Length: 321
Ligand SMILES: Nc1ncnc2c1ncn2[C@@H]1O[C@H](COP(=O)(O)OP(=O)(O)O)[C@@H](O)[C@H]1O
Ligand SMILES: [Mg+2]
Image 1 (cartoon, rainbow, N blue to C red):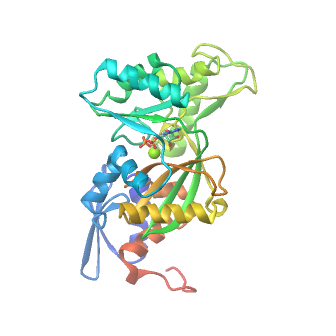
Image 2: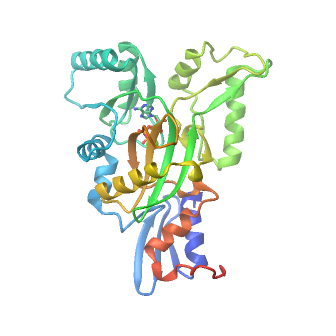
């Protein structure tokens, strides 16, 4: 199984909970203890209602609910199958005039797939819409928000952990081309993440590289650092850093409140914020199956099993056995 399922299974076994793997490729397993049986797909469990999941899956719906509840979310509009190219053009013009830069993404996407960030021309918006709709999904056009990318994990409506995610970047060495440097970065990523993360070699990466004035076959000088991707997702090569202890209490509270509003017991929120002091923030999305393995050394797996099987919770001072 992948690491996201594996750390949960390991923690369950450690507590004497019976584990039955149903489908290792999809991370599907069943936990049984004291007559209770809970199915899980990685961190998504029977305890998350189908309605909560339907809300989180749909970025517009999540957005509307959070906006109505008073949370700060980016300005956003849905481009559905009925939207004509002419309407897309006028919406793009409107948003570009209003915000200067926009983000285009699939309505139901995940792992940064099909997402184009920081688009500033109508032509680019059109291309980004085609990219986002590639897998047949509807598309969301959104105000671009500058800031640091924060993923916050909430379990049982309590804050557990936070990481800062930084989009993939490379540094030139004066010898290798951009393409070779990206290939080398991907070789390392494959080793470090067991194939989970990869910088896509596609038009979007090329667009981002060109924003810094480079192209695939050029050789950047030693020390020259520039971004490859604008999505901070781990799966598109973003790097992660534990910032659990740096996140302001206000952010913790906002994430906990948002989990109650969405009525989802295990959730990962994507925030954008200028800093972690808690003053300004934008809530980007809610993930119903967050990768709990990305939060070392925080006890995400422990809190997950505590939530499902509180009777197996370790008492304070007791040794893990
Ligand atoms: N409105 C936005 N402004 C700036 N960056 C954004 C915005 N929306 C998304 N991003 C960037 O793109 C990444 C992926 O977008 P997200 O909505 O979280 O989709 P996914 O479900 O694919 O993770 C985010 O983590 C963030 O780095
Ligand atoms: Mg996300």
